[in-house]
Amino acid sequence: MMVHIRRFNQSDWPEVREIYQLGIETGNATLEPVVPSYEKWISSGDPACTFVAYTGQKESILGWSRIAPASTRKVYEGVAEVSVYVHPSQTGKGIGGLLLEKLIHASEQQGYWTLTAGILVENHSSIALHKRYGFKELGVREKIGSLNGKWRDVLLLERRSRVVHWTPF
Image 1 (cartoon, rainbow, N blue to C red):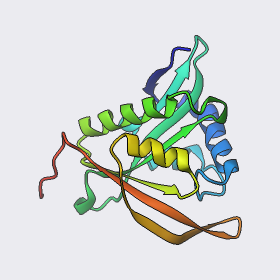
Image 2: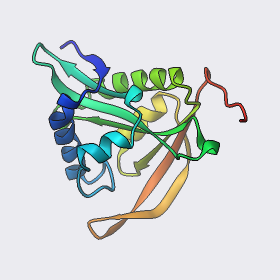
Image 3: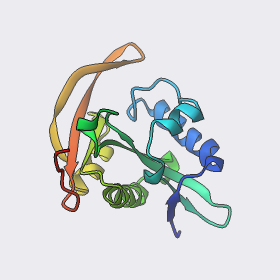
Image 4: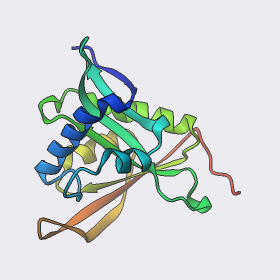
């Protein structure tokens, strides 16, 4: 199976939304209880760093990745949070790595010097994926959010670019 990565476009939203929903249903992908609206989802991320993995002539979406700037404040310019979701039927095939690799490269082209990831501690495969791509553990945020009435711990990871260097404004 040949997997391709390209920028997200609005026509991808139904499949991206489905993959997001399937991630929510695992209970270990996010603390979000529902998929946000398209408008909210697209406005919170960086379009230059929002990608889909696909295969075939029909372009079936296998997964997606994106970054969302950490803050609108000038002092956090160049810092963003990473999201990577792969359809459950496609896990273990290297798709998450392809998406994350593309995302890192694109983020550096856009001037991001620090990427962060907050991953539920039970999501071992996502933690391993991020570590393979240079993310380092910063610590665990204990009982930082509640999902379905249960407090959850989130591992905070960070990756500093070797290409883009922070310069004070």
